[in-house]
Image 1 (tube, one colour):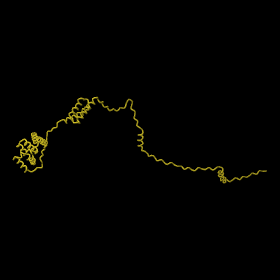
Image 2 (image 1 turned 90 degrees about the vertical axis):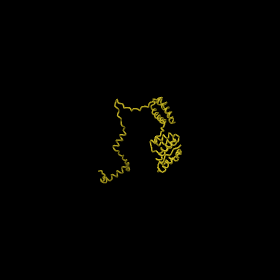
Image 3 (image 1 turned 180 degrees about the vertical axis):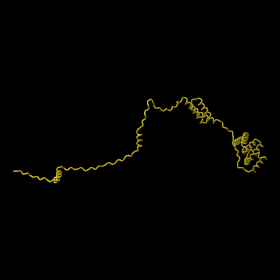
Image 4 (image 1 turned 60 degrees about the vertical axis):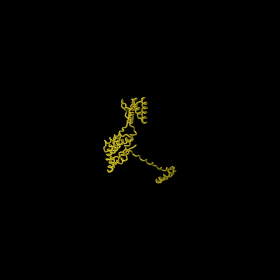
Amino acid sequence: MAKLRRSVSRPSPKKARAAAPAARSKARPAVKKPAPKTSVRPSPKPAAAKTPAKAKKSGSARSVPRTVPPAPAGHLPKARPKAPAPPPRRSTYADAVVLYERGLHALQAKRYRESAETLRRVIAEFPEEIELHERAQLYIRVCERQLAPLDATPKTPEEQVYAATLALNAGAVDRAVALLSAALQQQGDNDAAEYMLGVALAVKGDQPGALTHLGRALELNPDCRDALLKEPELEALRQTAELQALLAAAASAPRREKRPQPRVRR
């Protein structure tokens, strides 16, 4: 007996392709896809400031120290000369300073003679102390100027008239006459010298000489009339007719702006 073959119906190609994914999906478990990662970009770094080429070179030159080339063999660098040390003080210096300071103290106390003698000892007893010699000589000259007598001789006519007035007040009539005569030799129209010389001659008793110089004084300066009327040494001479005539002539003469120098009395 013939076997019956079971006919198997094959699906159409379209259906097979449609069913294939379904079968696959049933056969394989579904795998969950991970969520897409969000990419975070880092913030851009600020661009570094560009330094110019010259700055880079200078910076590199500073950072790298310069090397000094070694000295050639056989040649050593020259050492700088040291300042010479001060010479040591000698044993006599302290004694000289003590004597020198003693002379300065005497100078400050205005004992000029003692100071000069002490400073001269510094030069004589310590000849090797040259430093102190110059200072000592300077102060010795100061002492000599202080010890020198002042020249009290009046030289100008004004000084001579003033000195004659002091001499006449002190009773030195001859000195007053000499000073007034010297003043008139330098300045012949000095009315003050003529007036004072007339007073000095009146004190000596020389009335003719006194009248001559008083008349000259009234001629140069009629304002001398006021002083002549008040002068106590001319009391006897004012009684004479000669002086009264001179006073009358001076009274009628025009006044001058210049006033006679007042007589100084002590």
